[in-house]
Length: 364
Image 1 (cartoon, rainbow, N blue to C red):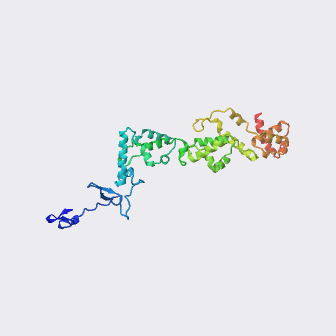
Image 2: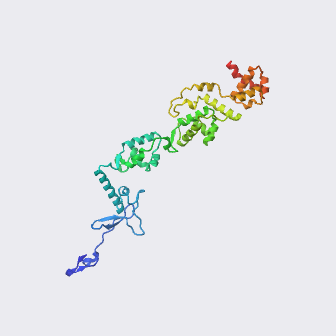
Image 3: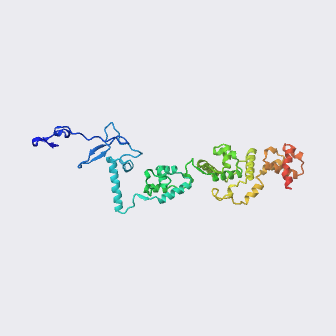
């Protein structure tokens, strides 16, 4: 308010004092992030302060990230100068100053130990996206801490990080349980486990059915030397833990034949059984097992079925496995029976009996 002519008080608006209209200050241009925040005078001071108070039909200052007004992160990273954000930044500064005065540890710690731990997690096939999900932060920030990317704006590498984030990152252990299901891992463990199950008689088709996979897909894993997904490796690991000390079913002739074929196939490829490994993931080669050579030299036989076939108790040659057929023909030959007599007793052809007698003749 100004005084008019003759010392009288002039109550007219400021832009009409002096007998002519005063030009008002032009509005600053609209920023890149949206409309300009309103400017209001702070009580007791003449300098304006930015505020996020908007008309009813306007919105708050838009932020570039998921931050919310009233947090120090919005003040620092989004450069928001509204009253709530400024108050949050001031309160955080006062808290940090009070802590330093009292000798308390600051909110930031050195990032060296965390960076080394991130390298250990990566060597254990725990990816940056999975680390970010487990720690509740962004994958970009994890890469910046690890030093694998250049920070935007030519900013220097991160040397200190928040204490709470460091605690969360150091709590992540480099174990298979923390790997992402779709990440690729070394196929050695999955391949050796499947081969060990086949070596004790589990047919590949049965293993594929239990894993919910096709037999062709399982056979690719049996010979894979590169990588498999963590989901496949975990399923194979769980199946191996259930079956490594369990014999396959042998209730029917078809099951006995499938088990014997699996053992023969594994022996021809020199696949080691479960007991031949101390650590199936990391051992360079299987250790020699005293029980393994005898088991491979003399396959498992169903003695009851063999004795019934030798006695002519209704067990035919087609009801036996290859090893059991050879054993029955060998025992009947030792009893002095001819090829035709054996063929008549087992309801088969003489040519088949002759083939089963060849291993016996070679052994003699």
